[in-house]
Length: 71
Image 1 (cartoon, one colour):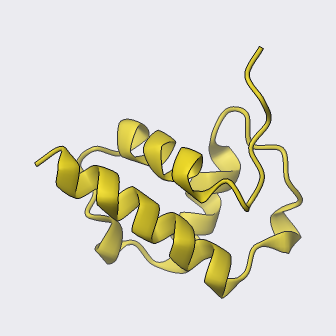
Image 2: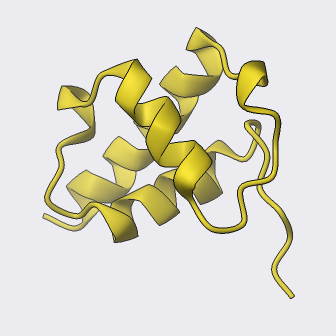
C-alpha cells in the first residue's frame, strides 16, 4: 500500500502532477488551481487548509523539474 502524501511531500506530488498533467507547464498554473490539483491526487491525505505559498512553490518547482526532464 502506498504511503499517504502530505503537503510536505513536494517531490512525490510534483512527480504525480507531471504524470497526471503532462501537457501543462507548471509555471502557467495559478496557485488556486495547483492547490486543487494536489488535493485531487489519489493518495493525498493532508488537510487542504494547511496549504500555503511556500509549500505550493516547492510543489510547483518539483513539478517543473519533472516537466523539463520530460521535454
